[in-house]
Length: 271
Ligand SMILES: *[C@@H]1O[C@H](CO)[C@@H](O)[C@H](O)[C@H]1NC(C)=O
Ligand SMILES: *[C@@H]1O[C@H](CO)[C@@H](O)[C@H](O)[C@H]1NC(C)=O
Ligand SMILES: *[C@@H]1O[C@H](CO)[C@@H](O)[C@H](O)[C@H]1NC(C)=O
Ligand SMILES: *[C@@H]1O[C@H](CO)[C@@H](O)[C@H](O)[C@H]1NC(C)=O
Ligand SMILES: *[C@@H]1O[C@H](CO)[C@@H](O)[C@H](O)[C@H]1NC(C)=O
Image (cartoon, rainbow, N blue to C red; front, top):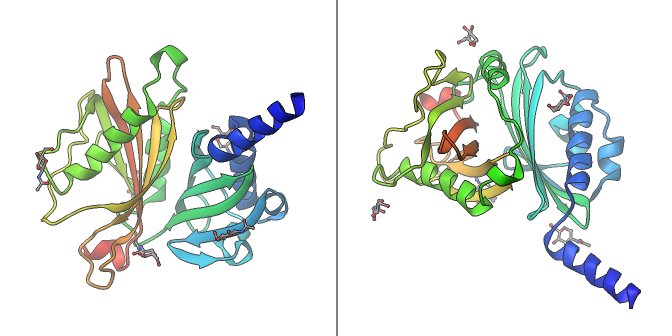
């Protein structure tokens, strides 16, 4: 009897959920590997791994993870429903500055898939010093259970934001205040208390597709990996991009922060 309950529990967990603790162990191992360049712990936690770096399949030993990087700051979220974690690393004082947006997908408590968007000089509005200044200035505390929003609402807010780029009629639940960090550029350097996130429409048709999500209701946050349809003739499929969105209830009442990290095929996406 006890055995079958245990087995049922394990089966249910394997199908749908994993613990925050397991996800935190994985994200810490990733961050440690990137800091040290040593893959030992990361490899121990991985199984049958597929590793994408800017949409190209690599092995961990040939990826950027095998190069030690001085990490100045990270923001990390954990999705216990999809068993994914999202890690945003800012490396501004490293000899080669980077902003790295990485998702780890876990299966049976092992890292089986890594999706990493690595931005550096020449990528969209890239300025790691600016990124570090502004991400550090923000406040993303964990949200008490009574104030947490449903994951569907958090994801829908980010989807509406991305949809509005190609269709300005889509209502976006912006909060007040709202600030956006794109590369190293910030929309609210003066801390105005206003919604400074509203995006103008891009020339149509414009749709950021192939969306993959990591949602953390405790952090009120979602990372949306997508193919950014920048008008670059050399990359008709678009380029790897992540929008990392924080949504709050209460007096903010909507999107509080957006961080965009977009890789360009040509310098500054041809702008
Ligand atoms: C290993 O990963 C591949 C590609 O993601 C998948 O098709 C295959 O089923 C996996 N094998 C095992 C044993 O999990
Ligand atoms: C990543 O962020 C966590 C939480 O803010 C912090 O405790 C940890 O030291 C950071 N790691 C690095 C390498 O900066
Ligand atoms: C990068 O951002 C920092 C901090 O906002 C700023 O002082 C610097 O001028 C920026 N560099 C460039 C090349 O824009
Ligand atoms: C644009 O968004 C509005 C509001 O959601 C919707 O009614 C309309 O059908 C959309 N237009 C297109 C071309 O998708
Ligand atoms: C990423 O690769 C997949 C499969 O090779 C392709 O379908 C997709 O268009 C690529 N995305 C980008 C942004 O290059």
